[in-house]
Every structure is written in C-alpha cells, then in structure tokens.
Length: 404
Image 1 (cartoon, rainbow, N blue to C red):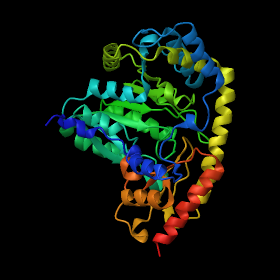
Image 2: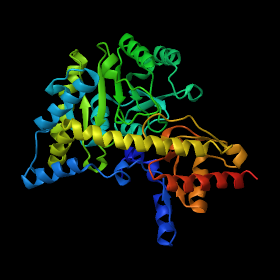
Image 3: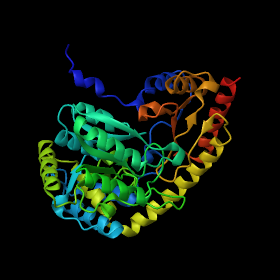
Image 4: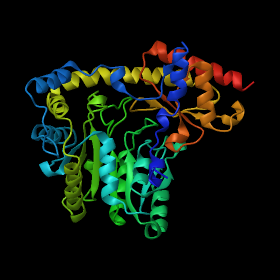
C-alpha cells in the first residue's frame, strides 16, 4: 500500500458533495451553495485591508519573515487583546499561523502521543478530529446540550474527566466559542466552571475564538483569557472571520500563561513555526493594519455584523415554518444548525437527505454528522435575503414532499 494508514483521516465533509454539485453545474443547472462559510465571497474584504496588502507588495515585503510573525502583527494582536479583553500579552505569547488550521496542527503535534485523548464537544468544527487523528491521538466525545441552547453540562464534564482521565490520557479540553456550526455563545459562568475543572484536573484548555466579533442578538462574548485564573490555555484566532479576509490565511495562537506547561507550549509552537519557515508576508502586513486601524475596522465590522444578523434572523424565521426541522436560534457566526425529523421524512440518515436535496432542489448544504451531530444539517446564511428565501423555500417544499 502506497498511502499511509493515517492518511485516511484527511477528509472534509463540507466539500464531499462538491463533485455532485459540479456535475449539476456543468449540465447547465444553477446550484445555490450554502455549504461553505466563506464570508469574503459575500462581503468583499475592506478596501483599507486590500490597500495595505498592495502597499506591502509594492514595498517589496515579499520575503521570508520571522517564523513567529512580523513585529507589527504581534504588536497589533497585543493591542487588540488589551483593548477588547483587558488581557496583557507579551511578544512570546503569540505565534502567527497559516490560519487556525495550522494552529490545530501545531497544537496536536505538540501535545498528543499515540492514544492520547482530547475532549471534543459535539457538534464540533470539522477540522478538529482529523487534526487529532493525523497526530495519532483520539477524540473523547461529549455533547453540547441542545435542549439548553447548546450549553455545556459541566457536571457531566466533571464526571467524565474523573472517570476517564487516568485511563485515556486526556491532554486538553477544546471549546469553540462562538460556535461553528451552532452559532451559539457560551455563558460566562459556564466558562468559569470549565476553567475550575481544568485547573483541578491539570488539563490544558483550548478555545477557538475565531468568531469573537461576529456576535449579535444582544449576546455577550467572554474570552477564556478573561476568566482563565492561571489554567494553562491556548486561544486560536485569526483574520478570516472578524477581518473578512479568509483567503489571507492568517491566524494566531495565544498562550498567555507563565506556568511551566505554558512556557513549554510557547517554545514548541515556535519550533513548529520555524519548521515551516514563515507565513505569507504581504498578508501579515495587511492584517497588522487591519487590526491596528481601529476606526476603519469598527466601521467595517459594524456594518458587516449588522447585515449578518439580519440575514441569519431572516433565515431562522423562514426555517421555523418547517414542522420537520427544530432549530436553536444562533447568536453568532453565520450558520444555522437545524435538527431534521428523518423518520417523518423517510430517510435513514442526514447524508442521504443532503445529497438528495442537492440533486432534486439544487441547494448544497452540509450534513450535521460531519460535525459529529447526526440528524442535523448546517446552513450557511451568508447570501442575500432573496437567495436565502429561495433556498429555504426549496428546503421547506422538499420536506413537505418527502413527508407525504
């Protein structure tokens, strides 16, 4: 066999129906794509960020940079966390990555030996589990509580940590806050309880906070960095969502702690950054400007989040007319994650539902089981309202037909 055994884990369910969608498009059909959350397709990257990238290229800033990131970007990230969360960071606390995806690789390659576990809550972002498995670790699954608007049952978490820590070699707890795919925001008291548990059981806490400014419906976001109380923690963030710059592929890992574990993590993440040499130089300069120019950023993010709020709430209301879907209202990001009544619709699983919906109604969405939550679908609510209305009307008609 030519391929490695672990290569089988390199899969992305978001793209699995792309071949079918492309065949339909080539046959002359028009497909509405609601599967990929690429914000820059719907909201052009702000001009001041584009101009900063162009300026960097014209100034010949196209060389290898310092592997941990250019000083201007590191300073911008430090300023952001002080300004937004009153968290004081040092230069060595921040490592620039090629998006959160590379940060996940650094994290798991640094921490996991074969058989070690990470606690992952379902539904999860699709890249978490492949990244763990490619590092020969294993995911230990717990569930967000859908009946409590996708909150975490911290008593259940404590019970599982006590029962499984010694047997499974649990290294860290992963949080996604704000959440993809559910669009929910964890409450501050939930985060505080998780921090207490991580401290008590000497576990590292990892928080993916890539949507921390895409929050609406009067929800309030709390960063783990604000409540960590000394627990070793890693924050994953970047430019893709808050700065509307998905293709720039700029992320950052933040390790604020001074304890022994945190110091080891900072050193090892920096080592991995050195192995891959550097991140795209012009994009780093552009993102440094994007974060530092607070006046332009506030203008751009305010307009964008206001529009996303309107689109998500509009789509959520239309989905509420479908008796075969049960949906928790999102308050962040731009996804809606309904539960499907598969039995009433005569389907065995959500994969069948999603593929047949694409074939019959020419709308591409993603199966919830790809995020670890069976009997769900993820809908990207980024297109303009007329497109969303057309797509959801097709979904409602499709369900009505299948239930007969």
